[in-house]
Amino acid sequence: MPPKQTVDSDHSDVEDAQVDENELNPTNVTKYTTAADIANRALKVVIEACVDGALVGDLSRLGDSTLQELAKSVYNKPKGILKGIAFPTTVSPNSIICHLSPLSGDAESQIALKNGDTVRIEMGAHVDGYVAQVAHTLVVGASKENPITGRQADAILAAHTAIEAAIRLLKPGNTNWEVTDVVQKIAEEFECKPVEGMLSHQIQRNRLDGEKQIILNPQEATRKEMDTHEFVEGEVYSLDVLVSTGEGKPRTQDARTTIFKRTEETYLLKLQASRKVFSEVNSKFGTMAFSLRHLDDEKKARMGIVELSTHGLVTPYNVLYEKDDAFVAHFMYTVLLMPNGPLKITSYPALDLEVVKSEKSVQDEKIKELLRAPVRANKNKKKAKKAGAKDE
Image (cartoon, rainbow, N blue to C red):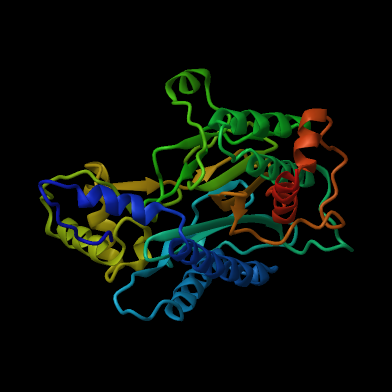
């Protein structure tokens, strides 16, 4: 949770503190990269456990326990620095697009992965409120000897190519709509669709969803309502790309929503169970996302969360679905907008094109040129230019 602050009537120390805590200075960047290392390592553990027969519930709990254990080993001095899960582990197979993190008693907890299943994993860690989130897509049992092909490969390559183009546009002067449009064009090159309405967020200390957003595949009315934002050096983004071979229209079904995040709304709760849950959420998780299974009494949590959600005290992350015959791919990077360009701090190693084989590819020359460009400026070239200017 944010530290308590006092305000001098003649000077706003709070405003100064907010500037300082979101500045990408060495101290804060180190906290971001430490959180990123935790998320990346936990993601690797879950990916390696995604084998034929593995249960979704077990994998979700494995991700969370790994995040928590890794967080225990960092920033232990000075005492009192909060750290741990910023977004619970979700393991969403096949037509389930995202946010599946079932409780042990839920039927979805017993879903067993099979060779050939498309699986999307998402999670996040934080250190002192500095958040790093990551998402990755895999196919169970895929290898060079058993490559991913057809429409399954189209979705994965479309999403991965789109996020690689998008990160190259996260530079001062460019806007959120340029990212929206390039993701749309790349998806279409692979005869796919971005998943409608999905958002990338600016992130700040203790805030998963900042003011600036990037939307995918918006309806025309939504496009008109959303603001245009320019990217600014020093900002941080969770860059989130989801692409489908189907309609790209997410919908809810029967799966229980288990992940929530506290809002800034206020309401006088009437039920004692709700008040206890809200008190525990405030003390344990602050503004980070949490799973109902992280609360002390899961049964009471299921009861109490209803009133909190009804009155807007928490935001639910609903489990979303596509049509059964669709393939969906999901990648998420956490990106710091540094002076020499975007710095990607979370991801899984680059896709092996000997494992993912699509007959489709980007044909648009402008996008191909964008993808050939380096993500970040070469420091040595900058120094050479400066030296040359001095010699002149």
